[in-house]
Image (cartoon, rainbow, N blue to C red):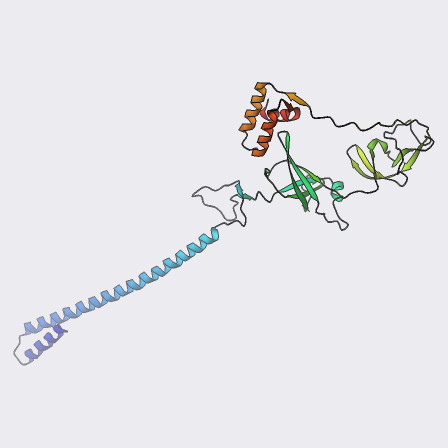
Length: 331
């Protein structure tokens, strides 16, 4: 503005014949330079304001990217609904994972099940009138170095399919207290079946292929009685017959025995008591090896280890327990 007024004043002086052309041109050049400088400064201010706007835009984009990254981090955080022990972990620090990749298996030690393969006949006996599996108490036993780790459970469900190359039915028992049990253990499951009433337990050799047994009549002659086979249990059968109550039955059939044959009954005096488990005496060297092996087994539960060590300190030790331990020692 000052340069412009100086130029205007010089023009007025030149018009009155006081100033020179050179002074007028110099004033004009100075005014033009002043306007150019003002324009340059205005452009610099505009550029600075544009850079401020661009910086604000970049800041907004960075905030959006940060929020997106935080959201993705929250989405990729895996939180299990229960506490447990990890198994089969494939993760290492810094490795990239793919979508739907299995990272590990989480095992809840308090929610274990025992899988039991039953024959179809055994499975049918566990169904109700509508064909559904009935929840029944079960006893789960794990054989550990000659001792048994036992807990209880409940039969809860059956598998939806038989399985490729398998027979029978696969059922599952929910374990109540899985102390000392781990996935993969081979256990024995005993299930309580419904009581069978009005049946007689006989040796399997007492029943012939036609479904009859030989009973002793009052005149010591054999009489064939029809019976219905309810169940086979090892070497015994459970049969039901209308005329079996109080009758003596031939325990083992023979081709020489038949209806009408007069016989002399040979009755058992009683059932012998079960034999006590065999005991053996251990040499100091053998006892020391067994004790060292049990003490070095860190996978064995502490209470089971103490129980076995206590048995090994006895003068005589159960032979079956010694055989089991030595078979695992390789000795």
